[in-house]
Every structure is written in C-alpha cells, then in structure tokens.
Amino acid sequence: GAGVSQTPSNKVTEKGKYVELRCDPISGHTALYWYRQSLGQGPEFLIYFQGTGAADDSGLPNDRFFAVRPEGSVSTLKIQRTERGDSAVYLCASRHGPQDTGELFFGEGSRLTVL
Amino acid sequence: QKEVEQDPGPLSVPEGAIVSLNCTYSNSAFQYFMWYRQYSRKGPELLMYTYSSGNKEDGRFTAQVDKSSKYISLFIRDSQPSDSATYLCAILNQAGTALIFGKGTTLSVSS
View (cartoon, each protein chain N blue to C red):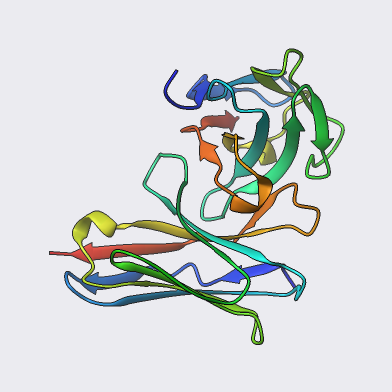
C-alpha cells in the first residue's frame, strides 16, 4: 500500500483481556517501530525491528507486552492481561533510509481503550 | 531530568505571525534532531531534520540547533491556519535505534 496501515483503528476491551494490534509497513521498508502515545504526550518508544528480529525492545514496559515480525513485513503487537493504564494510541512506523535521517513514516495508530 | 523537554502550550497566534517552538535536551552526545508535525488523530510526519549545530531552512520553516546550550528551535514564518497542529521535537538516541520525542506543542493559528 501507499502508507503504513494499522488495524484495528479503534479497539475497546475489558481489563484483563488479550489484545493484538497489527501493522502493515510500507513495502520494502526493513525497519519497523512501535510507539505508544498517551493523551497530551509525545510518542513513547516501545520496540524496533530490523528485518525479522527485535533490534531494540528496551521500551516495552513489562512482560505483558510482546511484538513479532515473523516474515520481516507485517508486525503484531500483543498485550496480555490488559490494564486501564494501557489505554493509548499505539503507533507503528517504518523506515527505509539510514538511521541518522530519522525519517519514520507513521500510520494513523490503533486507539486502545481498556475499560 | 527527562531526556527531551518541550512546553506543551497551547500556543495561539494570528495568521501571519512568526512562531517559535523550542525544546531542551539533556545529553550532549545527541547529534540528530528532528521536528515532526502531527494533525489531530493522525500519525506524526517529518518536517525537518538537522545534524549537529546550525540552521536549516525549508520554505517558511527554519530549524535551529544550539548544542552549547542543548536547545533546539523551530521557527514558522507567515503562519497559516493550516499550520495548526501539534509540533513534536525528536532526537535520535545514542544507539541510533529510536527517536526520543518531546511532549509536543499544540499550535493554533487563527484567520
């Protein structure tokens, strides 16, 4: 597709449930990022994939959060035993060029609400 | 101290005004600095990036980095209502693996 695609755009769930958020990056982009943005805050880094492997997962807040990118394209962010504090917009971004240009192409995000 | 600090505003200006947006950062080793713009309910999009110190100009936008004071700025000349958005400063971390974002400054330009 033309841009980064994220599904679902909105997800409402109950505390304790399991959630999966999907990201389809721009074709050919080898780097993929997940960020979380709470209301009134900037995006907060979660995890960075280069190809299929997680090159930096230092931003994952705890072991309830996990992400995969098995074929080096689509990625899924998985959240177990959701808590109300997990409510946020989860942004996915992809990049093709060198790291120092910093040009990440973001999707519109998946808005997660945990009741 | 947070790695990147940004005043969230909001900032309201009339059309045609010059706007100054600023961030400070804590680590003198940072080298790559960016400004992203985010419209409501959209993902951020890159406006400008700068390496090390100095100025960079692109149309009505000028990005400035002062490494001696660890201060980065974005200037918007002749502001337009279409510039109304949240502006996020971002810095590439030392490992080169992630961008660290400021909180964002919400700008409103009235016609």
